[in-house]
Amino acid sequence: MKSWRSKIKKRRGKAFHPGTIRELNLVAMMDMLTVVVVFLLKSYTVSAMSIPVGEQISIPTSANIVNPTEAVKLTVTKAGAGVDGIIAVDEEKVLTLDKAMMEKLEGQVRARQFLIPELQRVLVSRADGIKEIAKLNPQVKFEGQILVIADKDTPYWLVSEVLFTAAEAQFDQYRLVATRKND
Image (cartoon, rainbow, N blue to C red; front, side):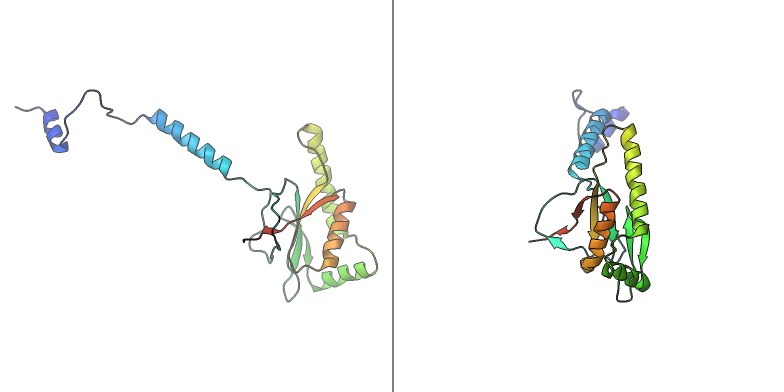
């Protein structure tokens, strides 16, 4: 009478060899998986930039290749032509750029008054928050850096008004954000 092991061997078509591995080593597989995950996380550089999705914004392109640093993000979306734009700080809406607001802001520029009070209040509170964190954490420093993400059709007077307001709120080191031009 044949044993049940010999029947299984015949079905598989392989003979059992005492030195072969009969099971998977889960510890080694978990080590490999950990190495792969760490590699993928390191190679997938999370940028300081996140361009708001779903907003009316078309970012200008540039051939310059400079990776953005971590900073406060100030976004100006497209306004005009029946579309209300917004001014946002770190994706928090500060001001709606409807037709009346655009006329008010343009009138301020003509009168040589470049300060946007609503935006200044939010930026000052953001600067104060970063300074408070810097007191508790020596690795964090307030350097007055801001990333300006503006639609490519944003009027120059509005960009200059936003930059003036940011500088008055202690954010005097700005970078204008553009996407990389594909060659």
